[in-house]
Image 1 (cartoon, rainbow over the protein chains, first blue to last red):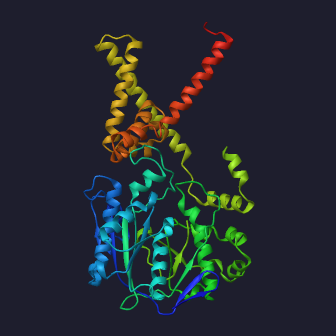
Image 2: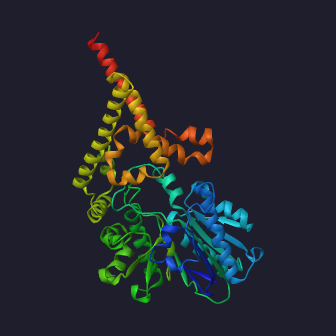
Image 3: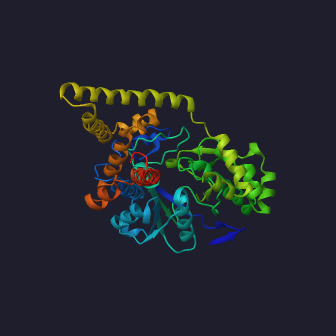
Length: 288
Length: 157
């Protein structure tokens, strides 16, 4: 059972379980603070493929395979595969879906694709629309640079605040029953455009939507930041989330103003995590 | 144009933009200028050295030596781009490696390499001028306008 709670949140009565997960990353991510937590760290970001796009697809295929192996399941036991990536026509995910040979629902929400997929997967499970759903997403630094910025070998000077798109993939197996963390609720966020157009400063562009989604989540569920041990967002960059509170409060709908007045500056324990390793208690999907 | 874009934003957007700009680490402009000056200067000195060498050892005049000098600089730039060195150099040197002819060669070759995976004709061929194309377009337009002015005012007959 799923019920609509508040304006834009789903409350899952029979909380879907996350049976297993698979994470595969490139060399740069492997050297990061979460390096030891990934299932596979590749030394070669091309993973023996002849294009960045094929490499990205390979990462996702491996992540999906690991998630299935850990749960001891096979492809034909999975009802749907839900996922997406950053490429045009979500190329990498669609080709990975060809390999996985599961019924496929393609998603696109830019950086929010991972949580968007997880939210829809949980929804399908809790309404009885599926027994096992694989939710996955992938990105590759070089394909993202190529599509959104400059060729990888182009010698332009990046500003000191430039962010780095993750090379890696993650997949999680969502099921109606079993052991594992449970998804209790999901809040679908709005697109909040604050006029940031710098392709190197994605954090500043996404932060207002992230805050809007988190505030909406609190409002819909009638809880505050204290309700959670940890609030994790992906890839906003240092201190950005705190930086955007005031203008967002002014831009948001009247309800959000109340939420903000309850939400003192220090209360919002918004911790930053690396884009690849987002572990979220709160299944919020900020659009970006 | 950038100013027009900013004016179109709502007051809230403008305020957020200001806030975001204030929070983001500033570019080290003075340091960037110094690096650009040193590296750009070194590249030009190298070019001068190559030209001198052509004049001394290949018995060329200064004018004759200009074209092969540029060709050698371009070749060096393309080799460094293919070896994956030029982008790292560019991150350090900024305009120092972007402005000289080596920067133009890097813009062409990096796009050519990047799109090779999409095929020789539709990949490399079609995308090679992706970054450098605008230089050629506006260079040609500027040359046309200057040529027109020269024709109208009759300078240099």
